[in-house]
Length: 254
Ligand SMILES: Nc1ncnc2c1ncn2[C@@H]1O[C@H](COP(=O)(O)OP(=O)(O)OP(=O)(O)O)[C@@H](O)[C@H]1O
Image (cartoon, rainbow, N blue to C red; front, side, top):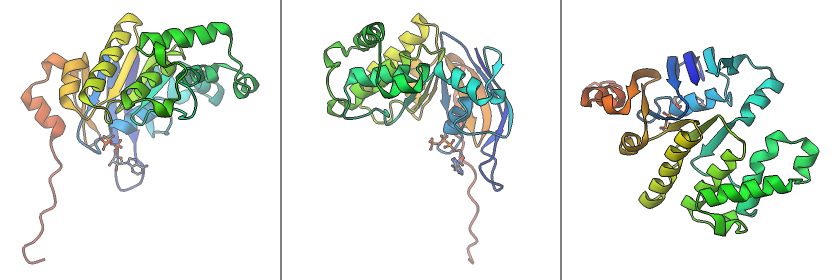
């Protein structure tokens, strides 16, 4: 279970980007963070694996406070947190199989990683994961020759190679067409259930969140304004989530 409690973050003195943000995300569920542009969705995701340092709060992954982890312990925790990005973050000239194997890098010594020393068992596992995301026939294809949807599925297989407890997905479908979006979201939902993963996902598209998420966290201007099951999202709650900040009135005499 991921429990975020009272998280604050200011990038500068002018503005607080997260204001006492609290929510939970359970294994076996897809939890979607939704809200307007600039609400704080990416800031939450980056705080959860401490890519950015926040100002206060607790981030408990199975009762370990990630914020309090020393560098070596943080590296250890991050081995078990997969990341999926909008722009896939694959190494284009390498094959799908090599990219998936990179998911094991965090668990290897630096030298074994640099030399690309992977065991037969690891290679077999990577191949099985590619098959599981429907890309068994593309294992030896360069990633920069794959479609966006295929690249994102390689990204999912790479995250699974880390044996994650949790996968963080930052706008994973923003660059995909509807067919690829459905494929990727179906895979993520199935993985949450079959592997009892915590899947925390930032989404711009409300209808995708409503179709695929079990649990919704709605944020507006750095404040959580809704947390609960997808089915309990009422039009009023949606209005609160997507409410625009009042614009400053411009004087007619200006
Ligand atoms: N590196 C930064 N320096 C200063 N301010 C930042 C930085 N990153 C984000 N912010 C500010 O923090 C707030 C939250 O940004 P964040 O990117 O988390 O929102 P978001 O909900 O992910 O937006 P979007 O949907 O557009 O990606 C915004 O006001 C943004 O301008």
